[in-house]
Image 1 (cartoon, rainbow, N blue to C red):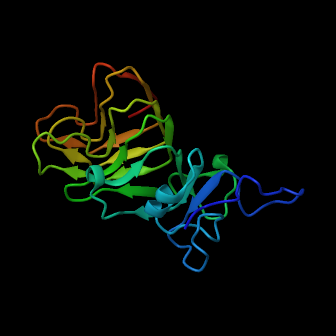
Image 2 (cartoon, rainbow, N blue to C red):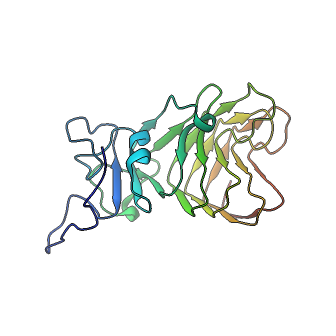
Image 3 (cartoon, one colour):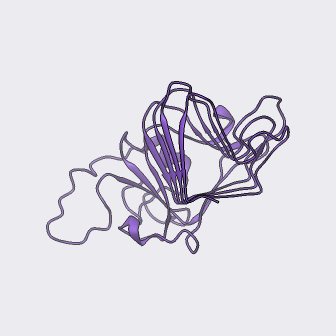
Length: 219
């Protein structure tokens, strides 16, 4: 499925069932077209949304648990050029309406699989997710059990997220920042709980010297 014709939709003075420039994900949207064009027709997997979303579109995910059998970059989900927003209930049209507790949106890793990998030079936002159960404790040298930010540049802003029970062998049980050319990364209003490394370096966060990392109101 390819998402198209969203930005050209006419408002015509009425409340729409979708927001232009957004691709929708809802694990419970089993009766729609599943092409991401509205909540009713949402993709049922984040994998399909990421694969089909046009560059620059936001991806909005309703509550639910997202898993994947992907082995690319040892990650359940690989994100390149789309901002990701969780914490929605199906039907919401405003990010300000989200509830990260009652509408928890989980990105889950697995055995020898981190939850999320950021692989491009684009600037992206990750907002409103629980990143959980990434487990890279099999291969020596593996970093970033929850989120791995690759060495391709681009700023990353991670907001309103929980990182729970992620682990890796080497560096950054929850998050590993691998850029060395000076991109800027921000973590704000995030909670870290139960993240570990086998060698004990950076159980929550590890950033290489070339990164500029700002941490605001995180536990």
